[in-house]
Length: 247
Image 1: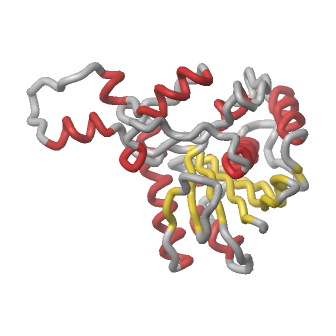
Image 2: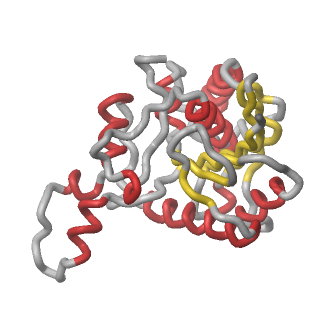
């Protein structure tokens, strides 16, 4: 069975977004198209247009938090201005999946409860809702590789690169074209890239979207680390990253 894949490097400004479109089958993931976002084409329409003439299940892999820390939500529900908050800042502002990835991969994701990434998370949730509206179909999170319909997962390209042992120092810098080319070559040895990756000379947005498809392949092949039993995943979400020890 073939699964449609969409990788999205999320941002609040469409001009800073990247998209990768492809498929997954028994032969692995194939990148068919990689593009940059524009203000003229709304992100949801870019996705809906690509899916219009496609059938079968679809997995969206989004580089953005899709939930907030449960302890913070519980505290703020009854908090009044000027009163103290129970718990440390890290306990309140970081999710269980953020701590898990730091422990297992050594990468610290941005705190969705405290950093500007919260605006990106909001934009990602708006994107999902807009796609639901355009396609007139539900989108829920996928928790295992066996699914149908349209599903989404949260991914973290920087952690995916570490999990695969891919050196990525400097690949996000404006002058990091050489690093981006090296990363793309390494990723291309793991998934099939049949389309050029745009703007490699100046930015990593489209490349990050391609890496999202590598993370999607890890998820679909059962190589990504699942949530801990005690993790409040329905509230907080989960970052799917390849297990670097097992695989």
